[in-house]
Image (cartoon, rainbow, N blue to C red; front, top):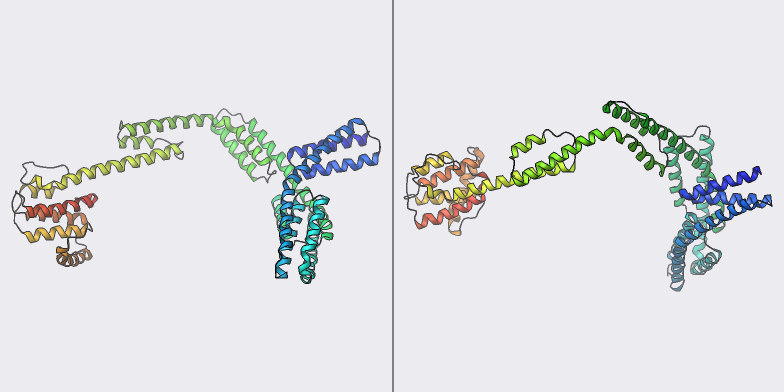
Length: 476
């Protein structure tokens, strides 16, 4: 009866492994129970029914594995049939391709249920036939396979030695996982091997890894229990002051993060439980965050509807502390910047229009103008009317050079002279662009003939207007 109890427990463990997706471990336990039942002889109907159910589970997963890998094996068979129908002229290429197909086949056997007898026989017969054109090269490849087998034996010995050296005190979980990963990469590099060596090497490799995998599992289980106990500690925090609760939680969280892994499947579940246990501490903070988000929403509406000045909105967002990294806060900042740029563009457009209409202010009676530079406005009130056409042309071409506008072909000669002069002035650093534009506009106004603008002057001013549009952001 005691034996039956142990067998029931093994089947229960197998069922848990199946549920966790650990198919190989589950199938191994079912096979062990099968052997024990055969040695026992007569067993209870209850045990036999339980075993039959778990055995069916094992066969189901084998069928699923075959369903996934058999089509891939059939593809390999088709590839080798194509190679037989049209072999390579170079025996080495033929052998390398067969070698590659054998490697694919063996890796499928390594990662899933081995091929069925009929499928394997078909593949082996086709492989033997494909080898015929490169019999000379076969011996060389056989040597490679034998060499690969020896290298794999060395890897197995390395695994065994690792267990012997560390079984008294295993290294950290991460170090062991890295060691196994590195060993597996090396193992994959030494494929294929002779068919008669493949199964023995595979079995020895799995057996050599088993103690290390068990040690990893044991450490993961320990870490799981420690992390679970820390989650329970978080649940027990019950101080009246919210900030005290949060500080205690953060301390436990740091302790939690210093613990090693608890298994890939367990980690996200544990992490979620840890944070859910602390959600109640952050409810007050969440309320403040929601209040600030409402403020952001309100400010965004004010900005859209022009119900509030930019200055006021900027002052209000300085009072926000909890939401500065939120998408809503960043979006509002971008909207403010866009709104400011739009206002600047509107101001520049209005200023450009006024400057293009400067000649309409000649001899104006107004005392001041809010947009036009004071010195230019004074000149407009009392122009000198020097009537110097050459000076008007020079002013126009210089302004075009500042705006990087090509003057008409007829003015190319004066352009070259003025470009040299302006370059020399630039190196001397006498004036800023803003000052140059101001002085040239004043000079243009003073060199008009009279308040009544002539056709020639209008033509030049049209060119100046194009410059004003181009340099709108640099107007004085």
